[in-house]
Length: 271
Image (cartoon, rainbow, N blue to C red; front, side, top):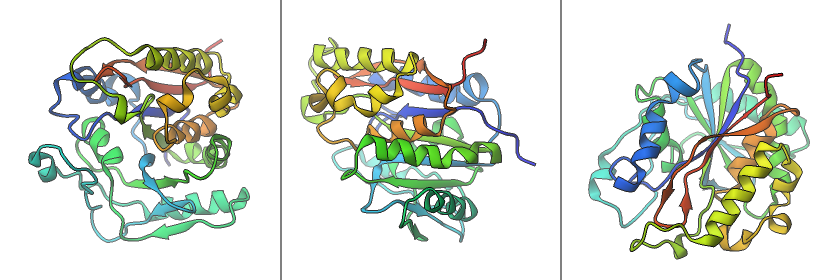
């Protein structure tokens, strides 16, 4: 019988070149310590919501024959990255369970993709967190034409998976405007810093409704996230957490002057 998992996670996964970028070293070290220092319970499978899997309707990849393919969904990075593999087995049973839970909660259509592998929002952090690649992985897509509350409710529907030993991980970027990155300075840009601080305070205080309404509540929201793809995975992980949970900042570093690699655990505080 699988052990119950209490916490959910949101990881800022950094660039595809995570493992070779000097500015990512603190994030790499954190991810490498995940099993030992952050989450020692071995999950039965992993449900990963990536900012790089966008569809019109919620979609799960349900790979059943052999390991998942490694998707190289990027350009302009060193060729050596195209040689990296993360041959984790697929999780078709988890995919069907995700579909069942979502449809039972009012999501009228949920698709299954039996061929899609793992994008770099999944394999890049997972190869550091679980390098053995022996835990089944299922990915769930986001819908960028929907709002944050939609994705929060998606997470709420998936909360029962934790009692089945499933580790739920959102993977994106706490701040993510690639047109504003700078390589000539290590000074964090003020607009990114202000949003990052606001988000930390809101999550630590458990003000999830404010985070759902971040476009109205947060400073520089549209500057930080001109598109919501890397932020919505946070809302899914947040929704899948316990109703009494709060966010805990478990890693923080910066890259390229405006990319926050803040990573959160959603947990019920100890009394």
